[in-house]
Image 1 (cartoon, rainbow, N blue to C red):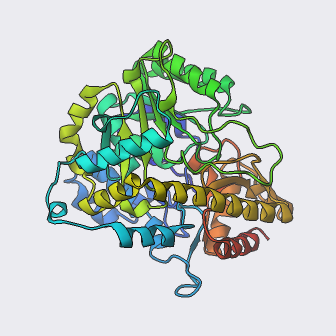
Image 2 (tube, one colour; image 1 turned 90 degrees about the vertical axis):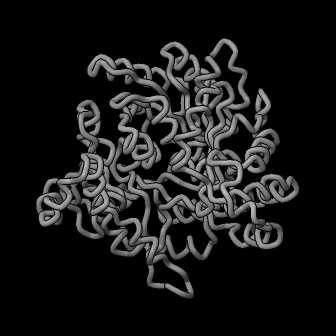
Image 3 (spheres, helix red, strand yellow; image 1 turned 180 degrees about the vertical axis):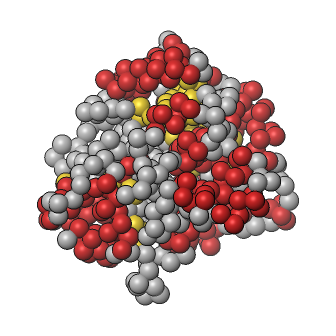
Length: 484
């Protein structure tokens, strides 16, 4: 199998990250051609050979984007998505983190309640979000996130999705070559969000046999920070959390978050908590050992004696809890750093939320009866879909990580299942996962490649189950055909 470099370490002048990640082949559909993996080197001299002169006038950043863009294949999936009636031969995705369970329910509300005015054809209140939207978001967060300090509209920066929000944080807090700590496994797109344009560095925190969410994991963050700073002479500026965790589908215990707050205070690092799955916590009806840790927002914590509140920042958006990826609405809640918000007066010009999405979101989040009903129904359906897919895994003797109770995903070991059928397969870190991944693609089913998500063991994949049962039935049929 060809080796690949991740998007994170294609950025020039980041030698530490090259060393940190060079042993991992980060295969994701953004980073290689459909059915034809290529080395970046061979791609540059082969597929782009005739273009080399043409793009020599580009900046290093632009040339890097051309290399990555040439290998981007996700749009091929999106443009050929499976549908049981209109495109039964299309590519079935249980890899992208989309929740389709209540799309019609949400659309009914939007059609019945959203009214646009001439104001929505103007710049309205500016690029940081309309007054109406920031008021609605703060109202919603105060009801659902139990904040220790009430969230005020001036604490909220609106962006066109949480990727833009993360990029804002990276751009504002990190100099070129400075680092953010991110424990393995992780949501793969964090790498691009943090590094591509801000030219910061992600330091993946190896966990070995430790539970990445356990209090004992905090020590590994500190070791990683000390090592990076000793080897590079540059600062680690932040810790990135995803709570509930993507891809493990669990909530961080309070003790772990307390330990991370203390660590960030001692090293004067920002603590960024991506809480985009906060309200997608549901009952696990299958596993007997589901953790008892419930979701607790970082906003709800009294930081006194733990961390300077100006170092605390929370992310949330409409993509996951309301199944509305396409609205492109995200929010940064930073309650004690007014200068951060001042900086965004200019930086937010490129992440302006459209007036239509602004109005739709403000209407939804201001309607308590609707949001209460939606969240309850969403939790019920997520629990049922999880029950169905896990029963399928048990039926087919597919190992999975027990105990998830949040988000849309199950972490499964398809490599082990494949090896039972094909013991001659090389069980190397990347090889096994690559072989299974290519076989899945041949069956036109997309799962998220575990190595791209920082898996420290081969053969693991993330499966998204937030879809109706017929969708999951078809996915399981194709998955089993791939591993047979």
